Amino acid sequence: MCGNPNTRLLSRLIIDFLLLLAVYCVALVVLPQQLATAQRGFHCSDASLRYPYHQPRLTKAHLTLAVVALPAAFILVVEMLRAALLPSSAELKQRFVFVGARIPSFISECYKVIGVYLFGLGLSLLVIRVSKSSTGRLRPHFFDVCQPSWGAAEEAMESCASQPISNATRYIEHFSCTEFAASLELLAQVRHSFPSGFVTTTSYAMVFLIYYMQARLFAPWLRVLRATLQLACATMALLVCVERLSTYQNHLSDVAAGLAVGFLLASFMAIFVSHLFRQVRVKRRQWPRNEQIYGYAGYYNRATYGY
Image 1 (tube, one colour):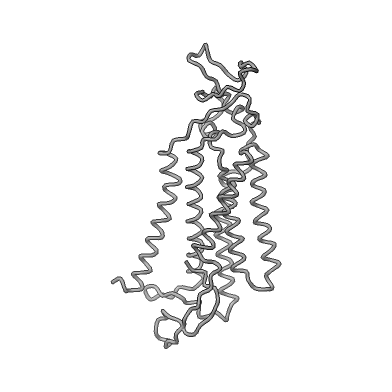
Image 2 (tube, rainbow, N blue to C red):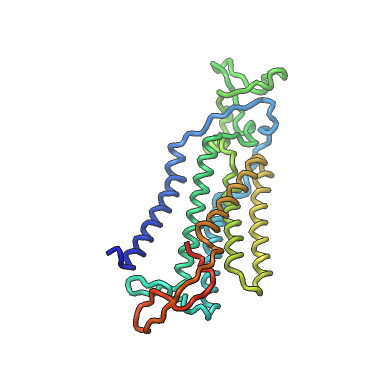
């Protein structure tokens, strides 16, 4: 039963799906409910927390389009064009057979590349959630959103406005927010500044696409197009960084950390997991036309871009 190619392929599909589902469930459901945020204090003299609150220009819908829809659509289009415009690789057009049905090569390649990409994106969400909760860093607009006060009783409550200049460097660890106009979600997010989630996920997506373009768009006549698209991806990542800084959503170090995490994760997934740049000598064998093809004849040195 284990030697059956159909069984092996189906088992691989099930394992990949369960692993991907587990990563996203932990990152989006389990950790937000079970992982408590560190209660970090502040100094009244801390000027980095006194910026005004501005409504961010980028929303979660924009982020979903940039890190999920755009990369998936781009990879699908490139693989379809590659299968249609490379007649010399006709032997790759029916690379797998499952339950008697021949699976085109571009479908298997899309599955592998997009699957690795989504798995890395789930890992980046895990890193973001754990880092934000464990550090509890306050956002630049903390004072404007929270307006903290502290004290044993309501009539004895203190605030930064009532503190003398000589006591402005006092570290306040236990406090409560008195801005009733702020929503509960906004008050919770005010402690989740490090690292920038928008920057981390966007930089991961754009760097992965840059690696993918370098590996797939290898034809000499595609160099200008490839460089243009790679520059556009890098520009998009930088624009997200500028937006998070200009709207005072994150500190500069939060943005830098997000860039570093996204770049490292994308590099690891593209080079060491999906093996985009590894060339493998693949053996082909001649089979009668009426038999299903599971092997190859001859040798060639083209990158297979597999796991």
